[in-house]
Image 1 (cartoon, rainbow, N blue to C red):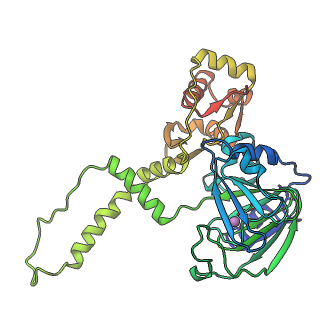
Image 2: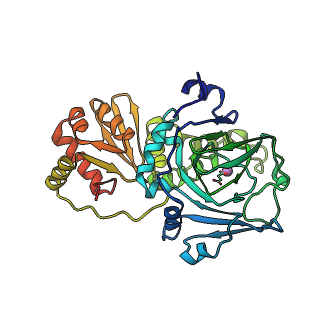
Image 3: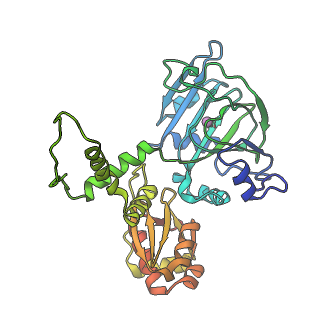
Length: 381
Ligand code: SIN
Ligand code: CO
């Protein structure tokens, strides 16, 4: 990715990330989309792939939202303008798209959500709205006219009774026409409206920011699985004047019972690594039944091994311990495996030769074989 002239990645984080929008002209010079509108429509017809069609009535401006999977007829009966097709997490289904994510490696992998791709003919848009996450909007084909407004909108500013949260009175404060390879960065909460000027494909590289509510509820579910019942005790209970009062020290003791559930840093780190690498879509994984020997042979012959599009890898370096996380699981590694683990996390396509340089052949092939059996990797057809 090419940031504007003289801007380093560190400058971007300091000045723009989570702070203000940035238009990056020709971030990807001569960018060619990895997917065509027809292929995108094909994905939207598949079971298990999340997709939506948003249509705006040309005369009344009324919005209609439909969810996939769609049929070919759904597409052939659409008008020539004023609609958009949105397909979620396309990188999960087209793993090659994950190479694009490497271009955003100035943000840690665990912050990355996925790549949504939209297609729209002329006048197609998803309406003026805001998102709660950071997003890079990469123009992959055609041109789109983006309008933004950094005004602080409130709940009252949205159209009532609509399933979609669209702003009722959006006014453009700044606008740009994006061409293939141009990209617009938006921090959370900046209102935006992108209208297609011709057949256009836009990639939304979205980042995830867990909410307190999400963390608490996920942690509680996990805690239920691992915690032993621990009951409140009060052997030093003192006589109180009025039994109706709940004393401050009792409230504190209760709060402490909850807080103590997350005070062990190592346990918490382990939970977080598993939580953040989990595959929330729960796709059906294919059965991989190669023996260890056959797997090693195939890897050697192919020269590389691909990570499935939906599989997240991360690691945490602790004192004397290296925790490797894959798809919601944890594997404890030794500190001398750091180079290998860093490579596993950064490469979506593992090179056999590189792997051999980073670790003992037998042990690394055993590790990769078990990850392969669990559905983390695939070989080219
Ligand atoms: C689009 O691709 O049309 C919309 C993406 C967005 O607004 O987040
Ligand atoms: Co948006």
